[in-house]
Length: 443
Picture 1 (tube, one colour):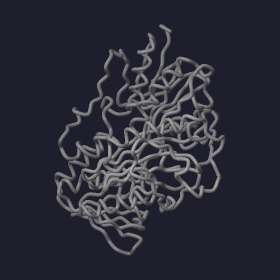
Picture 2: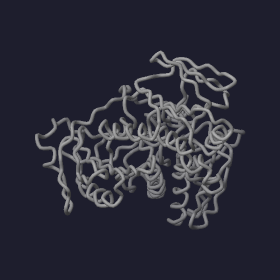
Picture 3: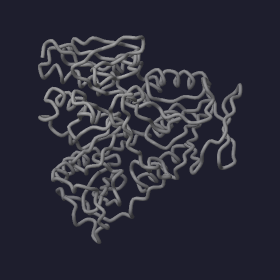
Picture 4: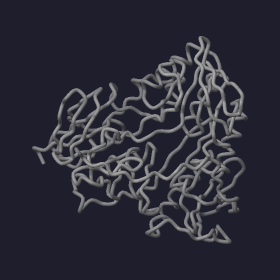
């Protein structure tokens, strides 16, 4: 494969690791990296922490490759149209790239709120290093209150960092608990208490109805009837897959790019997808295609997608990871493995005072574990979860009722401190409608 060209669209960690794996496996053709940003790949998790505090500068976040890649870069440019029949990618600026293989790794974009004042320098989102630099500039220039809209990981981490900087912080959330959608109500309530104990004001069950830009800040009228004024506002309500450039490409766009279990996209045999933009069925859990927006998954999926592209659809192996993610807030390290969001109820796997490990069960299967400031125990329980999930799951998500003894199906590790049953996982967020499959064909 010395005269061929592989184009990687998206220069985040998934795209970079895909390019590395292509070279590791001996691909000697041209690898073109299409990078929408002006910055080369960087460590995104640090944006809500070390970059905001000033501990690190943007240059410190640069990702390094451990082998020569010899890539052809297209920086500060994005794809605008993909012709899968002709194997041609059109870039903004009227450049056309013909490809023999394609890696789609464009990630997600910040979800926008209706009514947010356009071009107000006090209102921010946080997805890129430029977003983080702009947010830090506002935090440095204005010592007024900070408002964070949202209840997910980014919202919680930004709020914790702003408190570390000595700012008054208010979180406005439609949910009654923080992180409830991701980790369930029990841990969500624990995270909520952690923020309150560290001085974060929480306004839950509320939405922003109106925005008013003023010389001294931004005033928001909430659905609770109260006004909230802040010198800096961070809108952190999640992300949406960056797939606009794929409309009309004959690919299936279902909450991202729909893929087969081996990372090959549905609708094109010479294209794979990786990272936050890819929706695929992880057969360790079930056959439902899902996206996983976690850093380590992007790393692993980028490498797996490159392997699958070179192997071809018929020979490629299924990508079946046990996702892992972590967050640090107010000095507490929250680590998780598996798919806690699939859990119907929880059990305490290990309890030693404040540090603990929680298990998430779906039917009779352990599908996730979460450690509260207990890294040592999480090493063992993550390995145990991987063994537990090695068996083929049911073809469809289980509809069995919870067993009378939820601990009966649990694996054991040496010297646990006892397992107690927790109440069922409560989903406190307003449920969103299920995404509809959309197939967009070229006209």
